[in-house]
Amino acid sequence: AMSILVVSVFLGLYLAVNPSLYRSGLVRLFPVAHRERAASIMDKIAVALRGWLLGTLFNMVVIGAATTLGLWLLDIPMALALGIVAFFLEFIPYLGPILSAIPALLIASSVGPEAVLYTALLYWGVQSAEGYLLSPLVYQHSVDLPPALTLGAQIVFATLFGVLGVVFATPLTACALVLVQEAYVEDALGDPVESEPEKKS
Image (cartoon, rainbow, N blue to C red; front, side):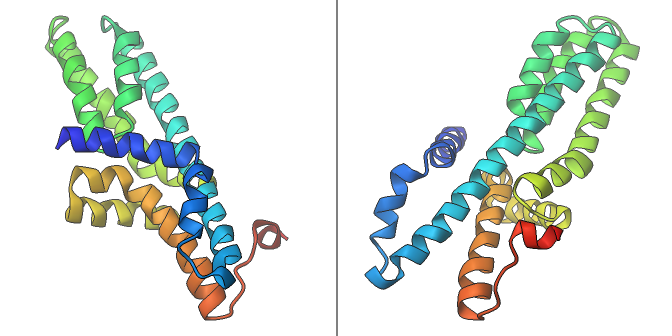
């Protein structure tokens, strides 16, 4: 299962970083008359994927920095190394933070039981703030996903697909939202989707 997760993560990264490499082949699957519109929708999906990738990277940096600072203030040894572990494992929602807390708690146990308690509270506080406040707000701006939709999608995908569902809930929801807005609301229903400048005016 872990090997599937790793392959899926790298596949998603390749698609998000260089979508044009795969775009032309997908466009050719559509009838000639619809290829221009299909290409336009795929470009918007690519923008959404890039937004998710940037938002995820921002979350990873914030969590890594907050964890390092908190552990340093608690005088836990190897605070920077533990912060780096938290940074990388932040890519995996829910499961990643639990895995990153294990080595921190083991190291804190060498300091004393009080250090273990404070370390556990630190990780719980940082991850609670990230899961219920930071991530929804970041993804609302980076991929234009409403916070409630982000949280709801994570719950649904986690129930249906487990760890893989949690990892890809946000990017898949962002792609689905673009498809619904462009292919269904705008094309099928004939109701133009407002662009960002129009929304702000």
